[in-house]
Image (tube, rainbow, N blue to C red; front, side, top):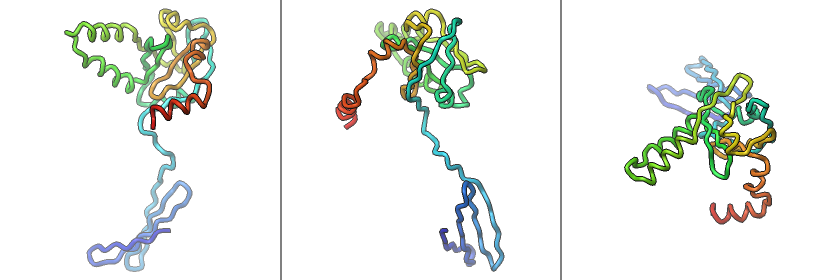
Length: 194
């Protein structure tokens, strides 16, 4: 319980805040009459931005559809809708972006100078390696054949959260590009984050 004294038009108000589960009550005393206001307070901490983490062993069906793990689907903002952006990414994996994160990257690429040959080549390569995909009602995306071939995806795949994007890997290739030893990870964190 917290008591606060507040002066307003020469009257004394006592505020009593009472925590009760997920609801908060605000009780105001005014000349021996009590007026109670009740409002709910969310206990969930809201994340600032999008965060994907962990990795999952998944399967591609014969049509090239991939069911996203529920934790990954749950981290995609509702405001995103069903459209995601799929890109041929580094180390021969695929990167899947919610629209808000893709737009940030797209804006950086669009801001490059089209009159500079190197920057123009970068723009061309980027936009030629991206396709929009729809998340169906079963939580699956269809990975185009060209993208499957680029990442050498077969039936078994790894879906890995990587901050603001989701990566889709061939399992053997994924194993080559992760740091398996926690001591090595700690050393790199100390090197780059200290």
